[in-house]
Every structure is written in C-alpha cells, then in structure tokens.
Amino acid sequence: MRVLRVSAVAVSAMAFSLAAGSTVRADDKTPASITVTFGTGNNNATPGNTPNHHILPQEFKVRITRARKLDGTVVVVPASVNFIVSGFHWVWVYKDGVSLEEVATHIPMGAPPLFLNYEGPTPVVVSNVFAKGVFQGTQPPFADAGLAVPPQSGAQNRTDSFAFSHPGDYLVICNVTGHFIDGMYAWIHVVDEGDD
Ligand SMILES: [Cu+2]
Image 1 (cartoon, rainbow, N blue to C red):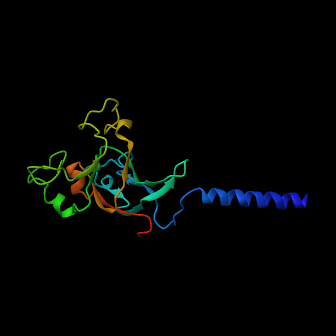
Image 2 (cartoon, rainbow, N blue to C red; image 1 turned 180 degrees about the vertical axis):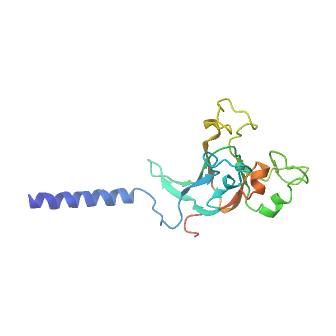
Image 3 (cartoon, helix red, strand yellow; image 1 turned 60 degrees about the vertical axis):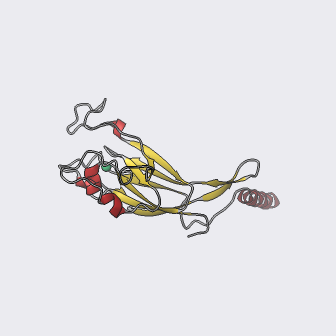
C-alpha cells in the first residue's frame, strides 16, 4: 500500500512536469491580462457624478506572451485589457505616443460636447485612435431604462476587451467629454515578454 502511494506521487509529479513542459512559461511579474474598472455608475449616481468618472487602476502594465498551439507552433498572444464598463461611458484607446496633454488641449472651448471625438488635429488623415469600445448610444434614453430615477439600464453595462500586440504606452479615456474633464483617463503600459 505504501509503495502504491509513492508510485502515485511519482506519477502525478511526472504528469505535472509534462504539463509544465507543454506550455511556454513566463515569470509572473506582469500579468498577461488585467481587469479594469471603467466607471461605477450603478450605485453612486450623484449630481455631477464625479465619483463615477474614474478608471481603476489609473496606470497599469500588461505583457505580451507566447503560447503553443496543439501542433507545437509557438504563437504570440496579445496582452489583454478587459474593461468592466458600468453606466454611460465610452472607451477610447489612443495609439502609442499620443499624450494626455494633446487630447486635453483639444477639448473645445465653451460648453463641452457630449462626446469629445478627438482623432487627431484637423483635417484628420489617419486617426490617432488605436481602438474604440462599444458605442453605448446617445444619452439619455435606453430601451429598458425603466422607471428608475435616474434612469438606469443593463444595456449600459458591458465588458469591452482590447488586445495589444505591440509594446507601448497607450492612453485610454472616456470619450464622454465631461467624464474626461473629471479625470476619466488611464495609462496602459504594454511590454513584451522579458522586457519588464
Ligand atoms: Cu465615462
């Protein structure tokens, strides 16, 4: 019985080493994916809503990794950022090299428009936006807003996932101008495996 138990341990240890050898392993200093809070508008609606207008964490790092397909081919796996979007927001991620100052200085004078929609100095030839999240519609009516005051809708709440295949420093903002003015922006630092 004792011999059997030792054998079982040996077999499971061997199975573990086989499993470990079947994937491309990286150290765990920087995650390959991260979950980011993009607004918290479900339970903190207040006049002005400033407490809702934040991205958490405001600065973070994710890594590009490698993995093996079933046939053994090694492939690049993009770094992944999963925004949990709660309430009326719109994720816009700018390309590497676009600064916070550049975007902030293009907020129009006077009453801020509902959406900033800044894609580079006009005339825009090539957009400086890397990727946009799902357009949530135009405030205020949502199909199932119901009778809640203020109106709330499950349709506003979603996950927007983005993949990054190239290292860089990416600015992400909420494209709702008033939210951006309230500080709704963050920095995504994408590193390649072994670069951090
Ligand atoms: Cu927002």
